[in-house]
Length: 173
Image 1 (cartoon, rainbow, N blue to C red):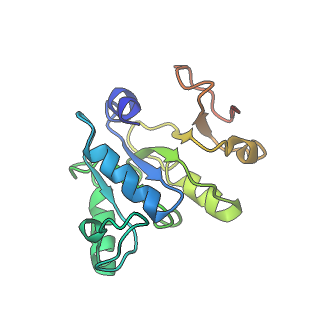
Image 2 (cartoon, one colour):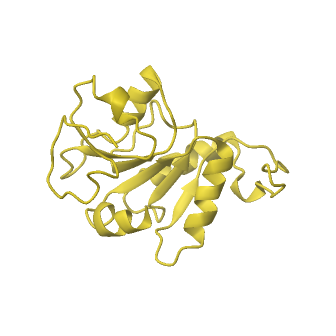
C-alpha cells in the first residue's frame, strides 16, 4: 500500500481509503502504517467506545472519536490541504461519503450488493484531472464486480504492475 501510494496515488495528488474487514483489522492497518518509514499520514475513522480494547487487549483510545468528531474529521480528510492522505475505515463512510479527492480504494473487506457499489462510487467521483477510480482488490471481489459495467480500473496481484488503463475491465487472481 505504501509503495503504491507513494509511487502512484500521492504523486497524482489524490488520496486513498483502506477498507478493512473489521475494526480490529483497521487498527492493525493504522499501526502498521504508523510504523513504516515514508508512509503517508493516515487517519482511522471508526465507531468505538472509550476504554475499548482489541482482541489482544490493546487499547483503542488513540482512535476513539465522538460522533461529532468523526463527522468533522471525515470532512477535513476530503480537503486537498488536509495532512492525512489515507483514510482507514471498516463499515463507516462507505455509502454517501463525498470525497472526490479519493482516487484509490484498497479493498480488504467482502462487501456485497448495494454497499459494494456504493463503496466503489467513493473513488469514482469526478475530481480535477481524475478520469477514473482505482480499486486495489485484496479479496478477489472482481468476480462479483465483473457483472457490472462500471468505469473503474481494478488492480489485482495479476495486473498490479501494468501501467495501461483499461476501464470497464476487471481482472481475477
